[in-house]
Length: 159
Image (cartoon, rainbow, N blue to C red; front, side, top):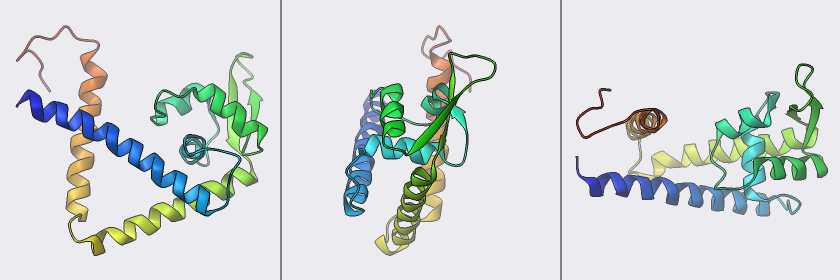
């Protein structure tokens, strides 16, 4: 495999994520939401119906170098999420969407449904394409998760 194709994929993943954040920004602006930003809206979507720690939330998404703790604080201040201290570790907090947060999360879910329904009409992205992309990106995720733990030389890695 060529080094240039590998670097192309890495750059593409970053650009796609930035474009996706722009899509979320347009959606929350269309909804008239001005008290949170696109990264905070993505955090809400990634919380979903769960109650989880900030650390668990960090593992669920990519937030482009932003401070998840800072954004969680802002979401609490604006009433999108509530929190409680962990019973087992008082330093840890568990967060959950409030009604306001659930409403926005649901609007973002509708946006995703709308976009998924538009794909067949776009003509070049089918179900099989999405499956292949998800499979390949999942493999890259597993590789990058392991590569930091291994002392690799070319040809040494076994899948």
